[in-house]
Length: 115
Length: 114
View 1 (cartoon, rainbow over the protein chains, first blue to last red):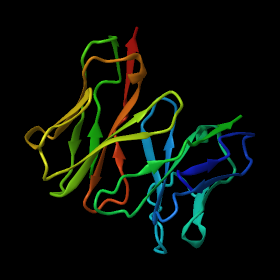
View 2 (view 1 turned 135 degrees about the vertical axis):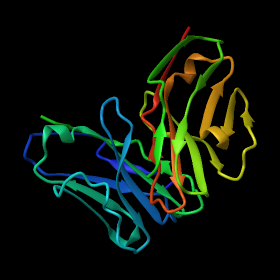
View 3 (view 1 turned 30 degrees about the vertical axis):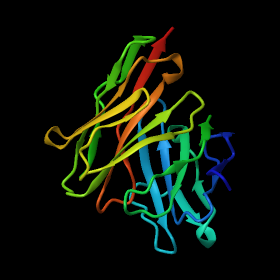
View 4 (view 1 turned 180 degrees about the horizontal axis):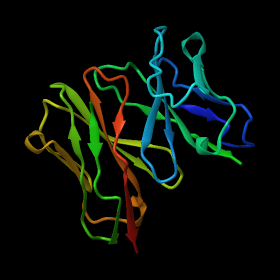
């Protein structure tokens, strides 16, 4: 597509439920990133995929968070047993590659509210 | 470790004033990239500029200008003759040579009052 597409744009869930957030990157972009933006905070790196290589999961805040990228394209971020502190906007970005300072293009984000 | 500091949490100016947003970074890499992104109320991050560590030339794009100084590890952003549409949160970010993703500052919330 023309841009990075994320769904759902808004998700309200109850504490303890699992949620899945989807990211469809720009066609041809091999690098894909997930960031989290909590209210009034900067962007916190979560996970990064580059092609078919093993993802860099160093930013995931707990083992309740996981992500996968199927076929080098669409990615799903899963949060299990959601907690109220998981409430945030989850941003996905993609780029041509992870090196050479390629520009990251961001999606509009998925706003997660955990009640 | 990499770090980006945007000391100004919020700036409020009256329309047509000039305003400078500060960004100070830390990295041990000799090759790195600096970015500015704009996040308007709609929420989507918009890329503004990228600079590599070997290019210290200042850049001007319309009312926007950027001052990159390696000696002070700063990459400041100036908006001349500000407009209400410039109101947004502005993020400075750093990509080091070995990093897998951008390191962002906490952002500066810019409010342009009519």
